[in-house]
Length: 492
Image (cartoon, rainbow, N blue to C red; front, side):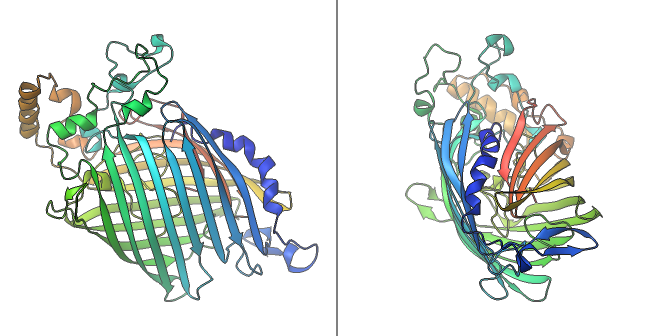
């Protein structure tokens, strides 16, 4: 997510003083005792409740100014589980001048219920300009000039320019879910999850986006211009039953092997999971009969993460391999952008492309029924220090990301050319299929690659501010080299 919460970084250190409230570091005894072995740098133990409030401030050219607050509340108990915790509460509330918002509550505990890990998440995300680049990654051509806008007309192609919203649509997202696992052994667990995902989609709300913009300005979004989302509906590539979104309750079951030394900042161990998610669809007045359209489906997910200490806990080699595929049924296009996960730790998991999957690649660039991905990085712990009675460290991590399609949409060349030709006659348009699609089969399975580097500022081993910069290898994935992501926690 470009230009997201950059100001937060500069506000971090002054506001962290609030975290000292409720902490119970003692000058003697176990509080300052080092948790040490020959393989790790000593860590000081934390006890009791630890909390603080941070400003959530950002600016985006399309979404406007965003302001709000976020907070983490940790219960470390008597310090037995440190750097783990008994329970954690997370709240975030933010809204922008162009009607983009984040409203989220998350609860997580590994020790409050004996032998169980429980998470509960409630999230609402109205998104006035969500990304949509078509199906199958490189099979859908990305025309940078069509949507690239600049304050200085000399820096943009005003002849080919169509609209800043050409690759956008409106998507309001709601999630309510609960996941719980049970320990079968020190490392093996079984998991059950239930929840509901709600999507409200449609054309961008141009009236809101054009507020206070002069009509003769290049920045003005002409509501009469078709976006790619509109064309997909007109060409029949988006079914009417899925064009406005829908509600999908789901049930999940899986197994986990976890030998990591800690959850937030692992320095050694393996985490792997395999699980099935059955998502239902039903008839509603607003979204039509999605069950009759065949949108009940079963997905399979597999993830393998490995953390290898190279030099104590100062240098760690970490990598993640994952895949998501449909085993039965049919999924609406908007659910194919949602990356299933057993436990919600980020506000939104999307794949593939963007800060939660392939950093540096356009968000949701690879829209397909199934895909695989990998993230590889070195994590350097550079400097440890104490401030405001809290334990900090600064880290740096270069990384490499890759994604590939495993289950593509069937884009038959003759059928698509015929659909577009008929739509041109019917709607008096002049779209050329070759401007939108590449019908080479090799483009489907060509990998999407990116690389970059990240800065981490961690407090008490759990609160991690992450600032990542990344660039895509292909100009079809992104021509922008200002891909910064400011988030909480490591990617995996």
